[in-house]
Image 1 (tube, rainbow, N blue to C red):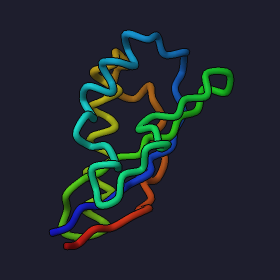
Image 2: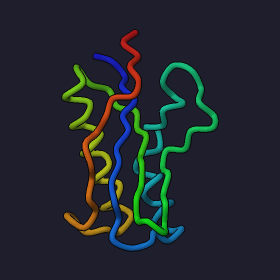
Image 3: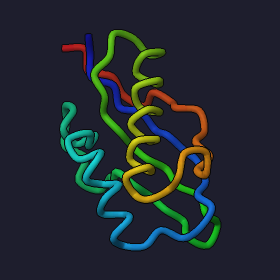
Image 4: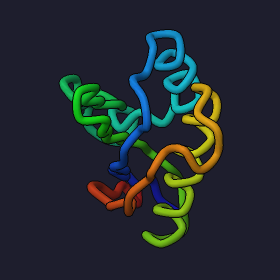
Length: 104
């Protein structure tokens, strides 16, 4: 089992209010890539382009392999957007990409 840093892109149908952003981040708190290996102080968990409606989530998950890590990150993203008030199916979540691995 290892820690994987996963990048999850996607689009949101409408702008995210600050309260929704806080709820989303509360779900992924503890899934911050800075907790895996080296600290990455300039890396935000959520990058959101309000004008384009696009986002990128950078998450850390524990998993047995890349496939399981991608699935876990996608599930975490769906739960986070649900907590932020986006009903299931309204946020388009793209393919999760492994951007770092800490097997130690």
